[in-house]
Amino acid sequence: MIQYLQTLGAQTRASFTKLGRATLFLLAVLSGIHSVVPRPKLLLNQLYSVGVLSFLIITISGLFVGMVLGLQGYYTLSDFGAEESLGVMVATSLVRELGPVVSALLFAGRAGSALTAEIGLMKATEQLSGMEMMAIDPLKRIIAPRFLAGLLSLPLLSALFSAVGIIGGELVGSGLLGLDEGAYWSQMQAKLDFQGDIVNGIIKSIAFAFVTTWIALFEGYDAIPTSEGVSRATTRTVVNSAFSILGLDFILTALMFGDH
Amino acid sequence: MDNNPQPSNSLVSVRNLSFSRGDKKIFDDISLDFERGKITAIMGPSGTGKTTLLRLIGGQLSPDQGSIWVDGQNVHHLRRHELYTLRKRMGMLFQSGALLTDMTVFDNVAFPLREHTHLSESMIRTLVLMKLQAVGLRGARHLMPNELSGGMARRIALARAIALDPMMIMYDEPFTGQDPISMGALAHLIKSLNNTLGLTSIIVSHDVHETSLIADYIYMISESRIVGHGTPEAMRQSNSAWVEQFMTGAADGPVHFHYPAKDYIDDLLSSGKRY
Image (cartoon, each protein chain N blue to C red):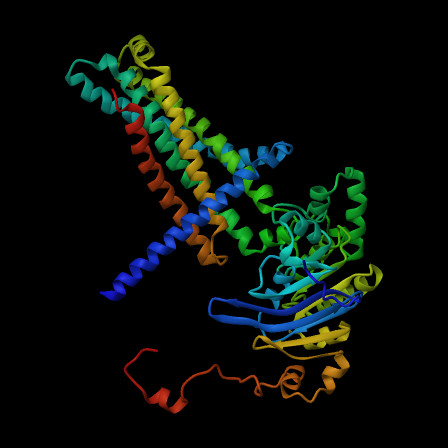
């Protein structure tokens, strides 16, 4: 029993220490972020590998999620004779929830894990140490551009996800199920609120981008520099990102859409 | 506030340094001096924290007690930007080479120049080719690090380390895992760079033969203390049992062949437990 409590205590302490390290890491990265400004090329390179390379998975997933929403929504709505509202249903669920959440989860799996593995391997092969000894701060040269790239990419990818999903819903609704195309678009246009739906969705995806990129970079930077350490860190990135995204989504949803 | 205890002819001085990692004591009150313009070797069995000493000198780790002085400055009392300024004058060659794997050889050598100077690209090209020529790999400039052999990677890393014309270079196990030819090439390179560029070199190694050929002075570290120091000649003549064992490579001596364990017979006969 005592031993159990000891283990529990040690684990709790270890997680708080890690949280502390992560916070210090974040502060150091944020204070170094201005150094990216005079070197746009570093940022562009990272925007490519973090953002552009995630393009395909986001587009295809968005299309299928939208198509499934179209099908399921149509079956449910037609029970009430409200299939005209399919556009609103698809768009609202994508813009408010599925767009930011699913694309953040995919982003954590595609780009976050890659970031962790890259940074962890750079640490394991002494590239980060080597840079420090060359008087180059790896937080500024390596971490900061990647952080900024993640922060910029994910909101754009989320918007793309939602847009493609809406098209997917329309393809199924009017193409497959014979719904009136005009109704799909006009209902959506009338009911969807820019401030309440779209802006809140964007805010969500910025929050997810911040957390996911932070976790991915920190796990890589904090990884035990062995092959096992890096593989564990990569796994932790995906798992912790998923938890944080879903937990944060609940909080943000409660704050944003509570009064409706 | 700090009294500089450095003798005028030494570039790096370690004073009463103690350092532990967890419960393990790595250094216990050691003092060393590295003379300007000379090659000083730190030798000892693997796992005695020789690399840790280089990281302490470079300011990547902080000592528990004692101080380290480099060119009149107490490394661990410097502010961050002062430490970075000092590091521009210190080169370090990592065991793995630590080349940036996403860049060519040329860009790797150009990296510190591009980061720290505002030289034009044509000037950088000239400098990089000169440094590559010095290590004999000017022809390999277009290769990626994964296309290099271990010895070549270390030579490229050496070219990068001298790119900013530092006052000293620290070598972390430069001879480990090298074939005799590239070992000889590296030893020759370390010696000639030290003499032609007027560097101060610190070599951490357990390779007795190559190191004692090029070193001017040797410190031997074992079990967190200095067990012997002197010129290579003096070390070979040393009558300390420990130094003798290390220099001749005898399997048993003050450093035992067996990891500490309980009695062999008892261990074999005690059954039941897995370990």
